Amino acid sequence: MAPAPRTEGERTTATEAAATQTATPAAAATTLPQLVQRNARHHPDLPALSWREPGTDGWTTLTWAGVRDHTTRLAAGYAALGVGRGDHVLLMASNRAEHWLTDLALVRLGAVPVSVYGTSAPPQIAHIARNCRAALAVVEGSAQTEVWEPLLADAEIPLARLVVMAEGQEGGHFPYAALLREPVPEEFGKVLDAARPEDALTVVYTSGTTGEPKGVVLTHAQVLANARALDEVVELPPHVEHVCYLPFAHIAERMLGVYLPCHRASHVHLCADPAAVAATVREVRPRQFFGVPRIWEKLAAAVRAVLSLLPEEQREAVDDAAEVARAYIACQERGERPSAELETAYAQCRERVLLPLLRAGGLDRVTWAASASAPMPMDVVRFWAGFGVPVMDAWGLTETTGVATANSPRTGFRLGSVGRPVSSVEVRTAEDGEIEVRGASVFSGYLRPDGSVEPALDAEGWLRTGDIGRIDEDGYVWITDRKKEMIITSTGKNVSPALVENALKEHPLIGQALVHGDNRSYLVALLVLDAEAAPAWAAAHGVDTGGDLAALAAHPAVREEVDRAVAAANTRLNRTEQVKRHRLLAREWGPATGELTPSLKMRRRVIRDRYAGDLADLYEG
Image 1 (spheres, helix red, strand yellow):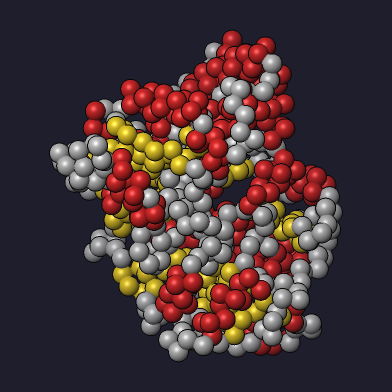
Image 2: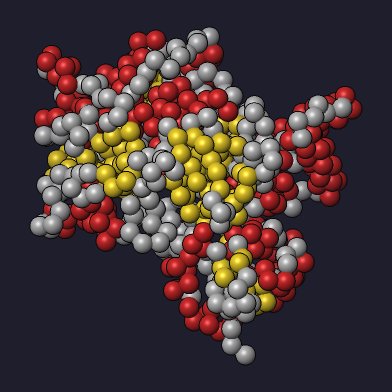
């Protein structure tokens, strides 16, 4: 049952009202509940959370006063179930209102919400439940209860009860709708909002690209330190809107979709279905948009597919405008003021050519476009720069509460780098090039099953991140690859697989790539066609396969073009990095099939194991 809104209104009206108000500085707040209370006092009628009820077209909106009142009632319900201060509570659901509001209600109660990826395998779920010792799990519906019910009978796991959000799917478990207490007992207010800065705010489990997920314990103080540091480098309008579509189990969405909105008194639009992100962006037209590299790649592929269908004269106009936009952004990147001629040319081409195209995709109002989680292919960076949208790459880990370094239009950027350290951390490189971080937003350690924290920092507070990179003379950080993912060939040469893979993906036909070559004399690659770009390429080149990806992968013309793409990538790589043989696969990799994490990072070991025969064949003969 979705919560009933206190106030409903048109998004544009709410946005106009927000523009007339000034947010109260959050520096005095030291915990998340204090921020919720501040927002309800100073901005009671501003929109906080919007979502779509199933079967409806419009948005349902809850104001900041509504969020405070609703989470108070919800917290009372969880308290009646026995949830208390310091208790871990597991959550598995899509980005729906019940998930977001439960998270805040538990935090206000002093409990510790722990979101679990919806695509997690049963053994991973069991490991997390065993590790965090939660007695309660809140799940979306029957699909989730089927996975969680066996854990109720596991003697090694203290899970005792399930709360089910979706009405009619409770299956004998506690219904979410019954949590909402009315009236709330008067004395209950004394136990709310009593969190201390040093208390755990959440536990975020790493996505498990290798090995078991580990529980990263993050405190109120660490999260708020990171929020303040991000505000220093990101310039946004007051009460900015955010399209929330990444899983809440990902640190990026926890910061962008829960904690920063509380810090900024901003407006979250929930997108429960990741496939509906593009449509939601077109409708909301947000001023900020964050996507992991694969999201920006897929958006670029979709735009390229549309551009390929334009008449030649229009395509040339877009290409000319893109060159002007890249020149304009290059001036910004160098810290130079564009010439008057370039200013005029950019203003004209942006208004006449670029903005209409961006408006069609809902990105015409974006003032902060960002990416993180993995290296961004430079051809994708250049593509968006050609639309006047410099994608600000950032870098960090779950253990650094998300962003540790960031590019910024306000403080400077270098496309291809991950920016400079934010003010809440220091960054240095070890002798072997590994990046090390310490500071106010760096965690202390991993959760142990007994509830204690296993220290993860050295005696001076430095965290070894596992990423290899360098820091240039201007303080910009450049990431090479994950230390444990570096390929060491049989000749002893070190190769960054991400560098080679991004070179391969510069051709629009290639959407995914995995490079292999540990202890081998040369590199090979598994390649996957881009699901958006490949059908458009086929149509433009007279290849008729009905848009079927497997049929395209088998077509001689497509294979010849992929061969040319690999050869072209090799010309940009040194001898050790060049791919000698490759194989084109018939289907995309994804979280549902296990090759990608829920945050769309490759699970290299899974792919290597799954395609072991293909890789072996590439080294035969």
